[in-house]
Image 1 (cartoon, rainbow, N blue to C red):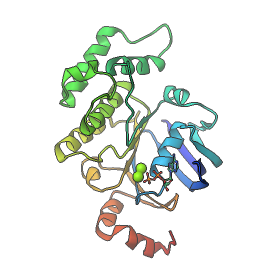
Image 2 (image 1 turned 90 degrees about the vertical axis):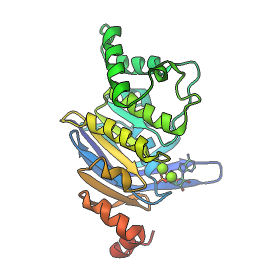
Image 3 (image 1 turned 60 degrees about the vertical axis):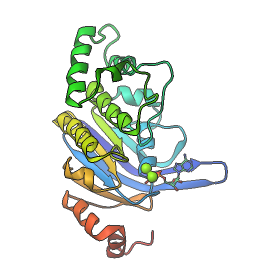
Length: 256
Ligand code: ADP
Ligand code: MG
Ligand code: MG
């Protein structure tokens, strides 16, 4: 069983004008086999948390730690974190010039295998066909340059394709549902649900409860003001949908 633990995480972002502390002591622990959701109002630091877990150098950890199986990730660059089994599906996936989607996925898979044991081409293609099919995607998507000219919905679907191909231990999915129509969201949910199992864990960040109707989380965390202020089971998401963040803010007597 793998474990990802965030301990008293404080994070600062340096933009031109100011040094802002965005995360103010986030605590969270999850095991493989589990799906956790993070909900929270806009601007509360959810994307900051996911970028920091993945190692985006724009975010500076000033206190606390991020541990994968007990080992700190803080001094590891993004590619090493990916090799260790982390995957980040981003709110705004980047376009990459000159690299096809298939090439990208093959090199990401091989980066996690021994140098003398790359995935056999035939096996790769078989997996690719299976997953394109599962996600109802056109096979031409694999040969296109990564995210270039992809519509919003295609980008999200493609992130799930990458997830299914790369098979990370932990996937952090940041608002993979934003801007998706209901059919596309069901496809995304189907992909994530097909990954469920003892060797896979996912941290699903979402603004709305809707996605969680299709991917039932084991644990729901609510983030406000740069901290996890409440955790509970799936019913917490439904309660939030009914009562809103204001209700919870009052209940907890928060001033954020
Ligand atoms: P959420 O994902 O919960 O909406 P974010 O993590 O995107 O929240 O943002 C939290 C706060 O940090 C916001 O006030 C945002 O403006 C600020 N912030 C996040 N990333 C950056 C950045 N790269 N540069 C400057 N400010 C940032
Ligand atoms: Mg946001
Ligand atoms: Mg965000």
